[in-house]
Length: 436
Image 1 (spheres, rainbow, N blue to C red):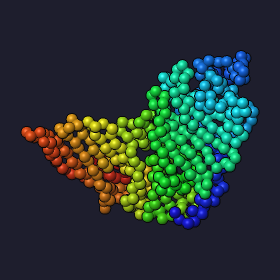
Image 2 (image 1 turned 90 degrees about the horizontal axis):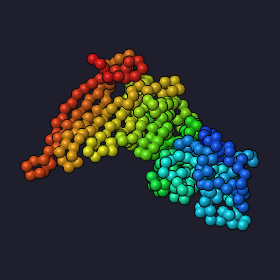
Image 3 (image 1 turned 90 degrees about the vertical axis):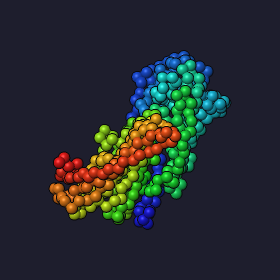
Image 4 (image 1 turned 135 degrees about the horizontal axis):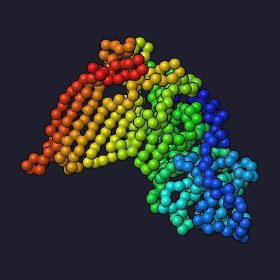
């Protein structure tokens, strides 16, 4: 990292590490939640004598995906503290000393999320003494018995150096453990919510070790107004190209929707000035048009293409490549697309959109017999121009493979290779395949 930028980032984090600055998140509440304060029958613990089903029906609902950023700033006024029926929710099974004399636990709020029709999910926030607060997600069976639980958020104001925040989605919890020391460290953990309501840890990583330009990426997220839990951190890409000696290209995939083996991503592509940390050029495209969707065909990788695409005088493009992989063994599939971008004022202009540069697929019996086709494309600049920009020659190598068993039941592969050339021409806005 360049020295001047490092100095800027040290000042940035020393001044902006206040964990109290949170993105405002929309809360969807049931009208029934307002009724809970009007119930009159009180237990010895000061709680209304409601059944588990009644508590569930009166608990507000939050839509998925939801980011829980529980902290003391959410409970400044007395009206911020809501009634929680800890007895009906069997909270003492999670916190055995909840009702003991002198206990410093105080239930502050609760909400539910709808993960499955086969179990209920409630998140309860507790204050632990004067300096700690945490939220726990609890899965209950339909009779109100606890299946499993997981701590998903934490805040402390004694030293103000640690936090926990989570993103709850249809079948997963993504948890960020945040520690402010010399820099903001984030350990990201993932938990899978099983169909029976049990919760299993599936992954853990330290973002400063997995993201090559970690402080820069945090700065970009802050500038874009994105919470770290709103992006697919494992797909973030960054790279410095020769044509931008003082800048870094950063690709941020923002999560729009997701489920089991499924997600949709908005794309944020920016150039960041190393000297100031400012975004100098940017491009945004929604998941509705960028095709950044992962399902049965999984989006596996986003990478930045470093090839020199000198398309006209003063117009050198860079590429973004997206790689997909099919999940079927009997019908293997791979695909890689290329999009090209150039600077245009303070924006980035997309001049080639999701052009397939590698495609592989086929069908076989998973033993031997089958047929496969692989097409690999190489882009070369032509000497011819259209609308002032060089045409792009596309050289395609097509490999067709046929597997068959011989009389000895040995599997033999026969390959046939062919080539073809097409031309991409600039129509004034973007490159398109030449119709002629």
